[in-house]
Image (cartoon, rainbow, N blue to C red):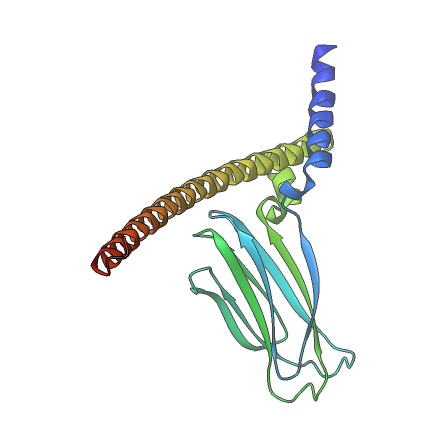
Amino acid sequence: MKQRGFPTALVLSALFIFLVMPELIPVCEGLWLNVPPTGTKCVSEEIQSNVVVLADYLVISDEHSVFPTVSVKVTSPYSNVLHHVENTTHGQFAFTTQESGTYLACFNAEGHSHGNKDISINLDWKTGIATKDWDSIAKKEKIEGVELELKKLEGNVQAIHENLLNLRSREAEMRIVNEKTNSRVAWYSIMSLGICIVVSGLQILYLKQYFERKKLI
């Protein structure tokens, strides 16, 4: 009885975590972009280091015989070019993040093949656990059914745990910054108060000497 109850408890615990903290689970994001004929359209996402990113993009055209082309450029938080291609209608890019920060993917319309119309692009953006091919994993490890679902839940729980650790790390960094800022503000206030006291004392001394010279006191 205990052995049969364990998977159920694990599933219920995982479902509870997913319902309470859905924003901590990496998911696949499907985006529909409209690129202006003379401009650039960019999408960005803040990603931690050592995270797998996989994306597919496809230009959508109402005229099946003519497909407008675009240039695609993906950059890291430190402006390192991770993917760059020109005159394309579809493609894919994949990389593992080396630093934490905002990663940017920009699409630029090229030439006049599209006339003065906006270009529609379908972007399928995946990060973290969402990039795993569960069918391949199931075939490789020879698992299926409940075992496969538990494997997926285990991966999601691990992703949540990593995100929580990242949040704790960022919270600690922000706390240190706040403490330093508060300390600097306190010292600035003390210095300002001391300068005011010194200036007030010098003014009083000057006025006293002035009145004594004028024999007013």
